[in-house]
Amino acid sequence: MALNFDGSSFVAVDDDAFGNGEGTLTQPLDAAVEAAIHSNHIHIAQGLNIATWTPYTDGGTGTAPGDNVRPYASMDWMTIAPIWRIPFMPGDVGIDIDMGYRVRDFGDTLTTNTLSYWIRAMVPGLGGEVVELSSTDWNTTRITVNFNIEVVRPLWLPVRIFGRSEIYPTANDSADVATAYIRDTMGSTYYSAGNNSNEPNTTTPDVQVTKAISNGIEQFHDHVAYDDSSVISNPGMVLNPSIDPGATYTAVPHFMSFIQIHGMGLRTFQDPGA
Amino acid sequence: MAYKFQIIDASRRRPQISNTGDTAVIQAFNTFILTSRPKVLALGPAGLFDSTLEEYSAKGWPLRWPYVNGDDGEVTLDDWSLQTHFPGSRITLDLSVFAAHQTASFWDPAQPALSKLEEMATKMDWTLGLEALQLQDGDASWAAASDVGSDSQVVKMLHWPTYNGRGTYRLLQTASYIADTGAYEYNHVFKEGMTGIEDAAFVSDHRLSLTLSGGGYDGDLPIRVKVTASGTGTPSYRGPAQTMPQNKANLRLYVLGTVYVEHPQALAAQ
Image (cartoon, rainbow over the protein chains, first blue to last red):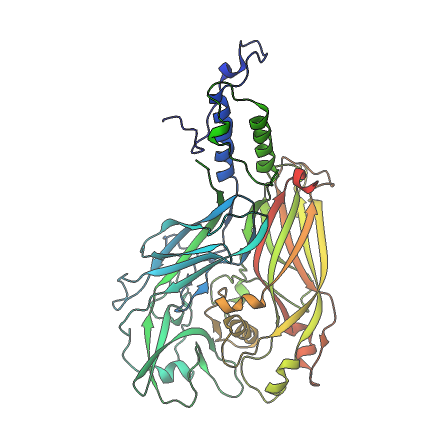
């Protein structure tokens, strides 16, 4: 490996730098040693500030890659990680977000994976980035957010990581589900782990959206919750945006892509000043 | 000198003998900057896995947002094992929470009139705690672990009613359905753990701080940090006369984010 002094690797300083080998410094540090020290500083500066998040998964016993990791899906931008306020120090010019993930969808055949999933990572005031993920198997990725400006004083700012699904264009069931979803006649499976399944389910509404058609106008609605508790009426599927209660409509479900996340790492970095 | 990592540029890189005073100072300063910089040790929360919640909320999966009800007593909300870079560091916890007044998700004649919701602001004291424990030789259980640092704060929080008739704020909408779940079998909250862009306004940040020392603290050993919270106050309610909001059980604290940061002593002494 070539010896570089640009901070890309740690550079050893050998005994020759210390002169005659008798433990006494008999010569001043030369330029090569100084460059090594400085390069090592840069190397350490770039690698020192990393932290990870490892969320609980499920208590299931499955060991296949897709097992036990809760899927996230939404047609609007919604966070897929906690909100973290972390320190940014003078000289920081960006942040790397590393992620172990899997993106899947059930498409119209329940087995195909044709849809993408988008991540929007941002540090308000400093910068953001949007990336498209389409991996169908477990994968890792690094999302690099290069700041618009260099940090010039210590700041504590939130890191927000949003996700957004792609909706499969064809309904996965052409039958009108307006009554089934809205009026409390669903089956017994509501969430992807509902039948003790370790994989996300093909039938559950957590990885679907509802398309409502009223007077020829189509609008998609995210599934927020399923409500069985009302003492006045059973609203059934709680949608966002909500449907005008006076509207006459039909509704069909669509699959959308979802993401499963094993863990994340954040790493702030500085300009190596090459 | 600016509080910033210094680049030694070409003008200071002498061809042969370069260890003149200025570059030596810069190198020493850079060492100081690198060691004294606040270091994020862990990100959380890990979530909440409680099999008794299986029939509710996100069925069969862990919840992303650990929570504590006002009448629960002290609950551990996050729990990590950490190894600091340097012994005796100061540890800070930045805690992002959502304080909810769990009003119903639907309209109910027993509830106050919709127009009164603006008055349903409820305040209550929460005691937030951060504790560092260390297992040392001879300790047989965590009960015997040494307390090597702790902090607590009493914070008076303003709780947001989760009723959200138009579904504009998804955090409120989601929280309101988590609220409903306890008594009903078939409620499921699909967007638990997810917030919309508009929800940032509901998040409040709190900081706890401790310095690792005492209790036979050993800087070579890892520590366990625990975040706790309990509703220790009496709800102060401004609104129409009825019982629901005044019940501590209807006030709930959700943890939306935790960040553990090490502050080496060199910086702490500034």
